[in-house]
Structure formats: C-alpha cells, structure tokens
Amino acid sequence: MKDLLCDEFQNVVKDLLICHSSVLDIMTKLSEATCRVNRAVAKAATDCGCISVQAEKRCIPENVETIKELREHIDNHLRGSLCVKCEDTIMTEMGKMLFYTASLCNALDINLYDVLIKEYKKDSVLGVYNLT
Image 1 (cartoon, rainbow, N blue to C red):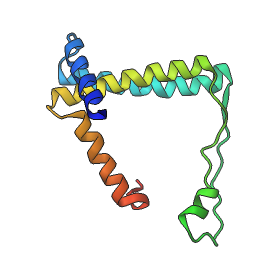
Image 2: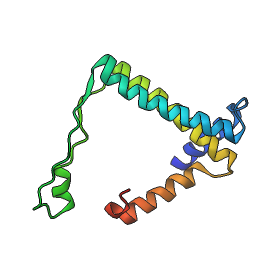
Image 3: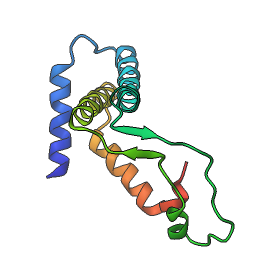
Image 4: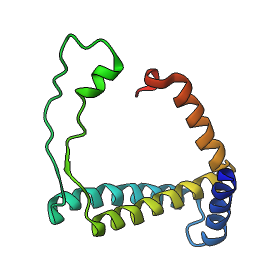
C-alpha cells in the first residue's frame, strides 16, 4: 500500500511539472527548496522564537562503551518545540523539497519508492556503521 502512495505521488508530480521540466531547472529548484527548509527552521528560532539552538562542543565521556550510552550524551542542540505556524511553514517547504525530489526521479527515470527502499535496506543492515 505504501508503495502505491509513493508511486501515485510521483505520478502526480509528473503531471504537474511543466515549466521546470529541464533537469537543470529541477536540480536548481530542489536546491532552492532545500534552502527554504533551512531558512524556515532558522526563522523559527530567530523570528518566532518557538525554538532556540544552543550549540556547543560535544563532550563525550571516555568511558562510553555502547551505542546506547553514546546516545545518552548526544544532543541535537534544539530547545523548545515548533509552534503551529512554524511547523506548518516547515512542512510546506519540506513538501516542495519532496516534490522536486520526485521530479528529479522522474527526469532520471528512477522510481522514488525504489530509492526509499534501497536507503532503508542499507540503513537497517548497516545500522550505526552507516553513519556519515
């Protein structure tokens, strides 16, 4: 069922994308969409203030022996939670990013679901050894 949703999304994108059908247009629109996601997250912190970023050097004790223990010392540096408006904005921008990702898949004759499955299999098999 999930593959049908992904395939249907890719088909809808194919039907909708007319003006920016060149692979060069798609690549630049995808890049722009990614930047807009980043900007929306930054604005949630700097304009709205619903979240804040408190980044500092990670200090991991030397006696950490397991991944579970390591996770206890890892922090994403985010404080607070997104308000409804910021969450909606970020989701909208992420939607555009997904749209242009599907568009690039269409231009290159790649099935988006196959990309998701390949990445899922790689991540689940390699686990923490897949860290990049």
